[in-house]
Amino acid sequence: MTDEISFDDFLKVDIRSGKIIKAEPFPEARKPAYKLHIDFGAEIGIKKSSAQITENYTLEELIGKNIMAVVNFPPRQIGPVRSEVLVLGFYDHNNHVELVSHSDNVKTGQRLN
Image 1 (tube, rainbow, N blue to C red):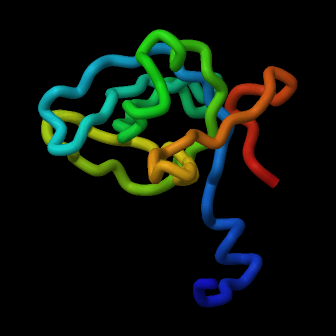
Image 2: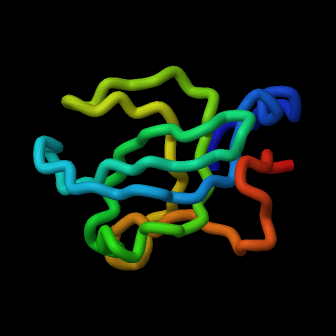
């Protein structure tokens, strides 16, 4: 377990629902990865990210996938990609990332409470 944080600290992390609308190869990455374009609704818009998820997902199956991401970290330059959000995931039993996802019942751009 990590150090405890206050509830106010948790509230500072803006985790939102998004829908992947475009996924592309990222051959310049040091480790296999994809470039993602994620729609977070009218308030936030479309943001870019990169993710090392090639073991569990094909480009085709990512399109339309509902995911969760932190949207209020500062952007990071990852090679030629400016990553604007941090896509959330868990390591599976093979040590590959599985994305945190949600159903279509959750509105795109909704904040995690």
